[in-house]
Length: 102
Image (cartoon, rainbow, N blue to C red; front, side, top):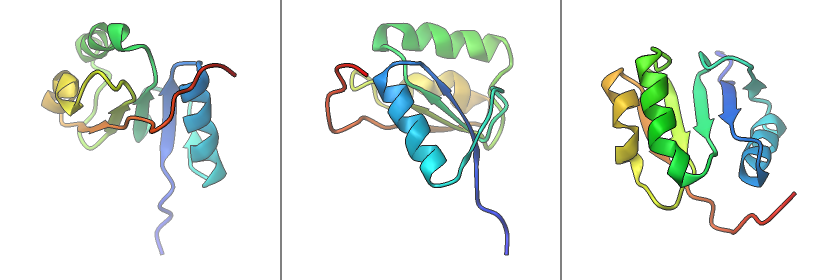
């Protein structure tokens, strides 16, 4: 049997990022300090999303087969095109509730 746990890195320290981090840890996925993780979650404000994705693409962060998710309700998965071009798998996950604080 293969261990199906992912390494993950959450970008964003706000309520959404904290909640996603805790949820992933609760099901025993493995937190990582590295952007080379199996799953990168961009839990940052929508206005920062495009610049962050593009900057990471220029830095060569994205990897083939890596899962890349964002949580902004303002965008679909198309904004992740720079990551997709590097072979990453794009995900747009929008929380069904509003996070207002910690």
